[in-house]
Length: 484
Picture 1 (tube, rainbow, N blue to C red):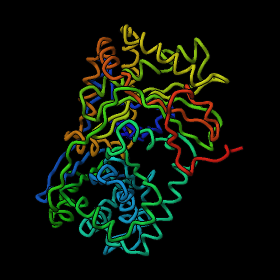
Picture 2 (cartoon, rainbow, N blue to C red):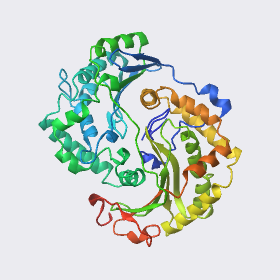
Picture 3 (cartoon, one colour):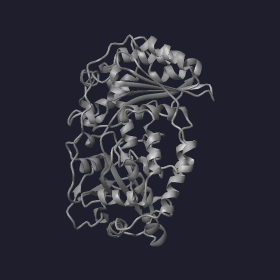
Picture 4 (spheres, rainbow, N blue to C red):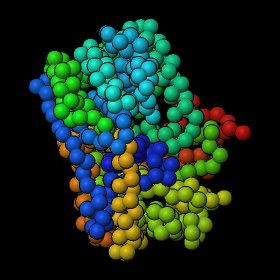
């Protein structure tokens, strides 16, 4: 995210890509010592073809289906301002078909009995295509994936760009312009990472850039990334590893290796003081307070401790902030805190929904006072153990679906160079101590943060401390009268 979907992305994948505000806390973290024997890494076979393609195979014969997840290491962070949305555009164009399969991927998969929760996704870091098919249809889908990998974007012409552009327009309308947690995401990231950071680029991109994009531009940008040596194929389900290896070799080995793809470090701004912003949402009926600090990337050593910090602050009725704001003082109805990790950076975010007439100003002041006190005391060992026990259950159950298993293996291969990194991180979480939680609280919860007030349109007076200087980061589509 994303175990994850918040997802993203750990031993289970899902996307808060800021939609984790849906009350999910990303797992992939602490497990209690006595439970570790029941949380084993997925058994898998890893193969690397001469052209650089990596394949990960997980056998599971409990149901006659196979999940396929094909990852290309390309996302919006590879774009540049003024030419955004191309990675997402290419995702859709790749789904339009291949030289020897003229119908779109979705229709082909459905014609052989397959299904998917979403079919494909582009994030800041990756583009992937995923679905589940009957196990006897593994060979046709591997043929189809090899056909489009061998000639990527073969359907990228002006007619398809026009068609795809309309699909993306509707996707953006639903995901960005209709309110919800993703609405202020790009603005918040730009403020935290810096406007010039690759992570400030919204994967959906502004429509102005998309309207100007051509098929030639899409091919020029994406083709260097759609190569075997920048791809991972993960399979999980009712298959024979020997047969799967033979099929992957048969269909993918003839594809030529591409030029080396560089994935260098991503520079992000380091704030030394608070940056204040307001986002007006015409669909919002009540304000929200978002506090965001730089967090830890997927494979960073502090990521697990920051997940623990999030839980200690907001878990159920016992989290330090949730108990204070919801149970004790009745100032809020919802408190969320967690580290949202990308490949090269992370955000530690606290989101609070006020209760009744509680002002965002009051919430900010109470939270600041509470965090100052929290950093000076250690969480109880009992609270930390409770957090670890609950994550043990989540870690076990969230890898039951084949889609989640394939996604987890591919995610950890691409971002951690270890398909079962999630299991090692879970083990590392067992060693967390109250002192570790206090350490990361002091290290990350600094004055350098973004304070974003999400308010109904034309209600700027509801912002936290509206008398202090702030930037209005509301895009044109979000302004207007609140929804009646």
